[in-house]
Image 1 (cartoon, helix red, strand yellow):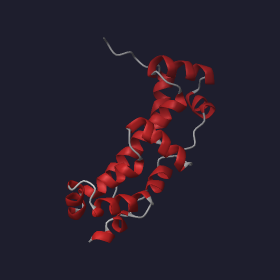
Image 2 (tube, rainbow, N blue to C red):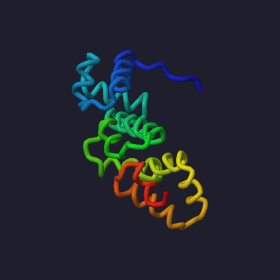
Image 3 (cartoon, one colour):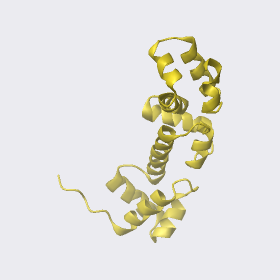
Image 4 (spheres, rainbow, N blue to C red):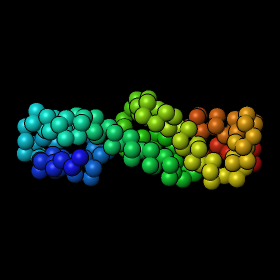
Length: 153
């Protein structure tokens, strides 16, 4: 099946959202910036993208947040990443993230940080070990990653 061409105003809307997904966009702002009516923008999103503008923006933000969680360094928290990605309510972010990716944001962050920690890698190889539990608990409590591994080093 050949790809559909996207109308110019919709392309502009997509470019705006991808350039600054953390901004607190409204449908009216996007439509105004693209020079089309709100309903026209919504209709074009539904027809060509398969979802409404805010649904597209949420998916874009979740994707960016996941990439950041997977690349995060030691001192990064889920809250910091959620806010930088445009989520103002961390609880809603976590719920939406879990629904989309099947794990909590803290689990993604912990898994990423455990890859970089030799003792954590060894601990997770032994299912249920005290070190693995301690590391997981610290991350769930929102402690920075460098503290997450402190108890068993």
